[in-house]
Image 1 (cartoon, rainbow, N blue to C red):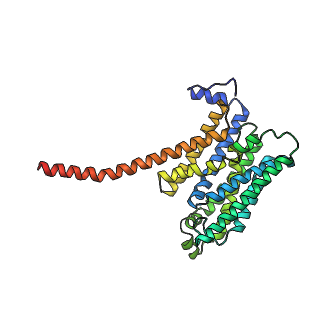
Image 2: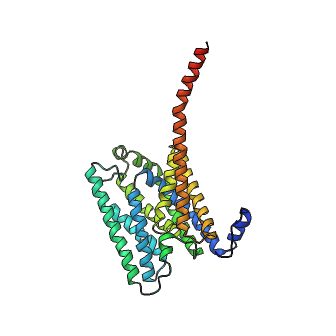
Length: 312
């Protein structure tokens, strides 16, 4: 931001940032995106659908490029392409199983290949749209790596409405979706509509991806969907606690990224991804330390018993 500088007086720093209306909108949008990406990403990691999410995040780029070419709202391009791609992926899926748990290796490979084909084609379309655009494409870096500049009140409202829709649907289907994610075969045997839930979840994932892409950029949206959820699931296996921790981590890294991007001239998506990756590494280190401590306890107990026996 040029003339602004960071201090360790957080109250003054936030007052300074929030004196700019676009930063107020950025923090509001970041909060909305962190919640919806965290909840959706938690189910996505549990269902092992990260490759499908990677494809949807890549689709955000041609969506934004097409919107720029057509002269329409970027949000419309993001949402339209991501949801359309989600429906295409759902149509290409064979059977109603979770990605990565399909019956037979051949079925899973076929699904992965189809997902990769969709991703490659739509990425090529994105570069075509950029080539066809004859004006000055002012923000390709912002489309790819994210920016807090230019976030309007209208965009925040659109994000909030979409987020409420996604969260409302997940609240309704959460229990059967969790059952179908953990054990799809048993869930199908008990009458859970596994295939329908899978299709609906892909659409919700497309909406969440379109939301997050407007903060982190198309190339780095994947990090906000995956890293907080993967970090939380490293720390606890309890679904409720893990889900809340995912949202908290996503919220923290998004707001920390906004603060960093305000004071330093680097893309917002870089900061969000870096902070989320650091949290993931810390979670791995904490889990490894806990495992090492648990392995040492029996040996220490035996040593103590032996010492007591020897003294006796």
